[in-house]
Length: 233
Image (cartoon, rainbow, N blue to C red; front, side):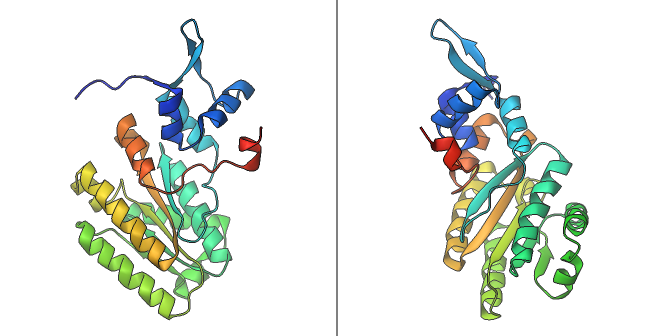
C-alpha cells in the first residue's frame, strides 16, 4: 500500500471535513483550526490528526433534518458515546422513535451515557421508543432489518425516526470490504430517505486511511454543517 501523505492541501482537507475551502480559510485565520504554510505562496497544509481532533472538538453532530444521513468520525470510545447519546437524546426528547445498532459492550456504554444525559431514556426504552440491536453480518440482511423496523414504526404512528449505528466496531464493518461498506451506505441512504429517517453512522477514524475517510464522507449527505456565520462574506 502506498504511503499516505501526512499533510493534506486545502482541497483535500475540505473534502475530509465536508466543508468549503472558504470555511477552512476562515477557521485557520481565526486560529480555530491549525495549519502549516508551505512554499513561496504560503499555501495551507493540514495534518490529518489535526482534522480529526477538530471533528471531535466541534462536539455533537448538527441536528439532522428528516432523512439526514450523517457520518461521525471518532478517535476514542468517549467521543463515540458522546456523539451517539446526543443524537439519540434529541430524537427521544422530540417524542420520536430511535434505533441503536452496535455490539453489546458499546451499546451498554452508549445507553449509560444517554441515561446520564437524559434520565428519561430507560422509560423510553421500556415503551418501545428506543430499539437496540447489533448489525447483521451481511448488508442485505441488515437492510431488510431496517426496512422492517422502519415500516413497523411508521405503521405505529411514529413521528421522528432516528438511527445511530457504530459500524466500525460491529460485524458488518469487520467482515466486509471497504467497497462493500460504501455500497451498503449508498443503499441504506436511499432506504432512509424513503422512510424519512435521520441517521448518524459512526466510524472509527483510526481504522480508516485519509482516502477512505474522504470517500466515506462523500456517500453521506451531511457531515459538519456550515452555519450562517461560517458562510457569510
